[in-house]
Amino acid sequence: MGDISKATLESDEIAITTLVTYAHTTEPRGGLYTLAMTEGLLPKNATEAQKDAFRIEHMNLAYARWQRVHRPPGERYRDVH
Image 1 (spheres, one colour):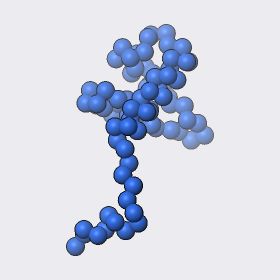
Image 2 (cartoon, rainbow, N blue to C red; image 1 turned 90 degrees about the vertical axis):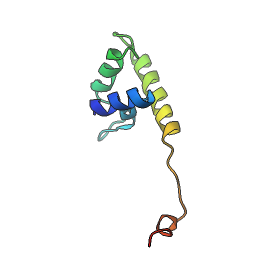
Image 3 (cartoon, rainbow, N blue to C red; image 1 turned 60 degrees about the vertical axis):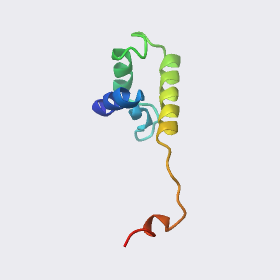
């Protein structure tokens, strides 16, 4: 997961793994914040509020950058021969 976030931080300046959720929680694991601190995106002693703000910002950036295209039922099969 860390390699994926490193790659999208480099290419798009977005930590895509902010979108990852785990069973019974929407909180990311600590690796996301460790990476953010290492990359200088969060202070070393980030508060929970700073971590939440970082996560929300990057979630919104990811949703805006990689918008899902909604197609009418069956449309994606029309051009297939």
